[in-house]
Image 1: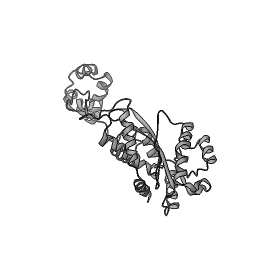
Image 2: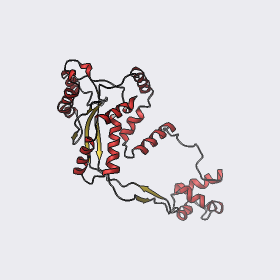
Image 3: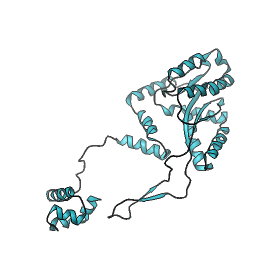
Image 4: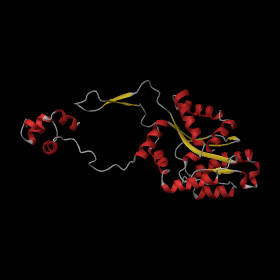
Length: 295
């Protein structure tokens, strides 16, 4: 705003309307510091615009900007934590590990892998149009920013799910933050019966299935590790912070798009019912399609 004002009023500095910084401050309604500094800058350089390239350089590279923009176009409710996890995949150390992992499992068909993950499905605000916010800029009254209307504290339903080429496990819904005890309880009541049904030989031979869970602290906790060992669950490790190596992430994305674009629930009860209805459409054939994501 300041540069725009002075850019439109260069004659103020040529003719010196008030002759002093205090006079300019009163005339232009700007701070005394700006009124004192900008005439000197104009006298020395013929403009008060900031030099191109001056100031501290940005720590955000063009690659990071491209990744963030692509992700926000894909899902504009992506959180800062999710963006950090996504950008962490670009670390050189993780790139090497991911490349080595891909080489090792290049010929794998992943038919005995149980893909698991948690997600949060929030209740969207479905109003016609968007909110408009006009910037406080007295020199440019036409500058308007369109903002999508969102509640400050949206209603959310947290889910845990698992899929394999043999079909999905029952979907678990829970409130609050999942900790290690809750995670182990879900594994005990949902994962173990699923393994017994879909991978019956796993009781004696651990290699008959591979259980995939990321490296979240609750997944790697001593309590969870002890449970997996005692119950003979074969935890199949993947590289750290490799969200795109888990096909269930694509299923979560489709679920969120289904909620937002088709059913549009209006309250938490409808949200829960629609999530259940969507999960009933996840057949073994659908799971096979997502499993091919890695090929």
